[in-house]
Length: 165
Image (cartoon, rainbow, N blue to C red; front, side, top):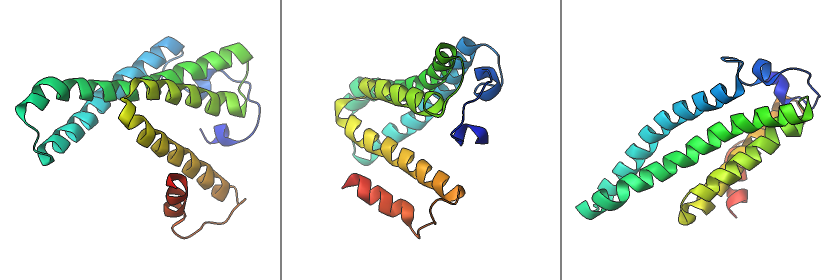
């Protein structure tokens, strides 16, 4: 996966570069969806349960909102993960090769945007900020690893503050 961060054109299949466990794109996407769903249900189930306990929500919340909110947020992560893998393969098949933007930015942008539309409106803003922060931090670390910029002490904190502002 280190080669994917280099700005080059690659002549290989999506099986060789992206989903090495199976040569079938649809199976790879469904495998990712199953794995992401099983992990996301644990993460969001615990998160919403602890939040409800700390806020001392009544039984009405657990009966009416807990399961739908948990499933909706789980769907957000599942769609984001599986759609990224699917679009990774689709862009490769349409273009015939991998380019930097077609292998990373384009599938991630479409997958994250689609997944954000599935999430509750009041969570879209914070999730968009969080995803943007991760993208900027990843790009910054890539620049550091290539020696283009020098590391900055507590640079991640500064970037997060700048993005939130």
